[in-house]
Length: 142
Image (cartoon, rainbow, N blue to C red; front, top):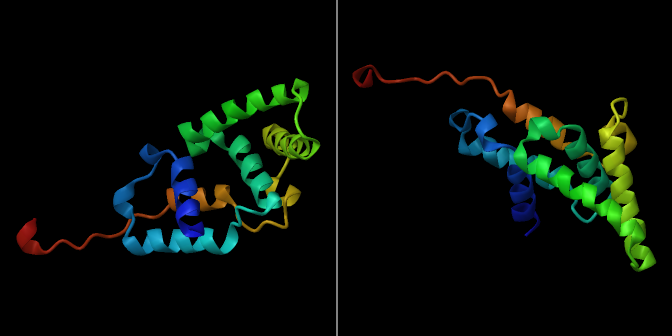
């Protein structure tokens, strides 16, 4: 369940039009999934906040889904005037703080949330900048 959630989360945040999918082999996708599995813990609040911070900091590079998430977070500020359980309000405030840090130019989300080793920014950059593979085409197919 965790692997499925993480892969869906990762691939839903990245604009598929910004990735040349023909560069990827099944091994690349498995490697990305393994990286997500080993580094991202969706139940760890520190990882959740780092993810929120990085999405806000890199929404233009991550695509339209990330931009929508940033837009949705702007509505969370209205929860301050709502009556909510204190624990829930505390969590929302922590998420809003992470989002605000992501919008600041001089903040490094990795330094702010160093206990979480997963970086969506690094993973997206790694696979977006994947070098061209040399394709070997048999002569009779040219």
